[in-house]
Length: 297
Image 1 (cartoon, rainbow, N blue to C red):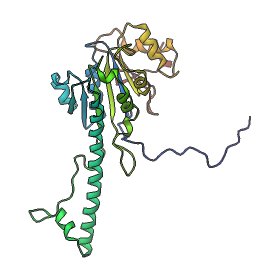
Image 2 (cartoon, rainbow, N blue to C red):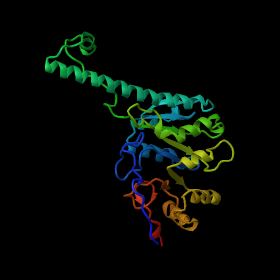
Image 3 (tube, helix red, strand yellow):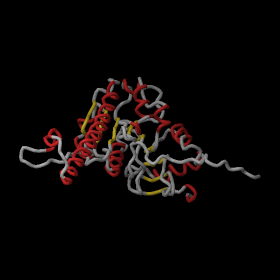
Image 4 (spheres, one colour):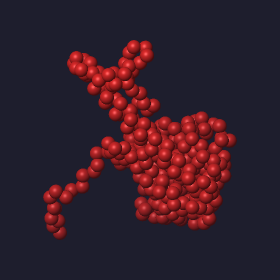
């Protein structure tokens, strides 16, 4: 069969992906919507802490009624904002405002830096200088002060963690949360293009909780899943189906068994739905061991 190619209609990807930055080669891509699924004391918090640390986020926003009690968690992932009223859906608006403020601060810095650089060039060239511009950057100590930015002119890397949210108002009335998950990469849009963006991390005890749990919209936006040991066969079946036809259910169960083993030492299966091209598999035992389905005997 002969295929006639139409000229000028090839796909050209954008030069910049909104809110994205390059992670280390062995890490998942930025812009995560990650779900950690496991029973109480299964190790969800430890896994999420480690993933956030390794991905190099600058700070974390936490939505949880119990976050203040976990001092180690707050220190290790630099939690700067905690919202403990999980029935207040306006929390989602406040998260958006924090990220919007980051975008405004970055744009203000970029504008000020342009003005400062022009001033320095005009000084060097001996041009006439505007008094207001001179005073803007001239300090009381009689020297010029270059504009500064908390993140040195780059986009901050922000993680948002949701924990102990079962039955909460935010989960039960999910319209705002769904919007956050759907557009998380585009939060804090910049006039010059792109966005600040954020990665979302959900810690849950049941993948498909009928009442007060994560809804289908969030699950469909999931870019990675951390699955701890479960005896719920239907839950495994549901997660196998979420693998988008990459492997059949029988093979998935073998991958799961390979990852969990005898269940000791808090094992989990990490599924990277948007794996990088250089990664040999979307499946890992914990974060540091790829599982190749074709090689499982």
